[in-house]
Image (cartoon, rainbow, N blue to C red):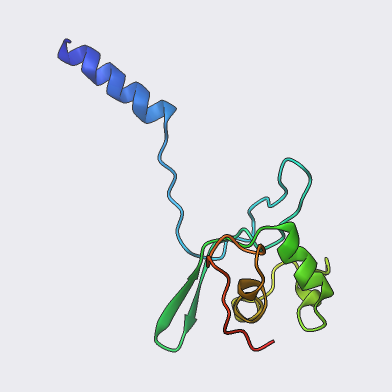
Length: 120
């Protein structure tokens, strides 16, 4: 194969398959409605929560009907998905994840298995 043909193929690959870079920050402008009309609100948005000297990373793994149902039925966390505050601060997101959603089998794909050391 001629060098010019190789170069052309490489250019096509670059333009037809762009690399997408996603960092772990709050990106609340992401459209979270899936093709079946299910709205994940903030649950499919990656973020990093800095707590003390640790960076706690959430990778959007709790976008599920079970997670939304658990939040709606929780007296402590229902306000996080009530439609009035679809962009809660990172502390409250992390609190709901670690004290509720990570503890419910089927609510999140990670951690897997669900946590068993939950206080609720």
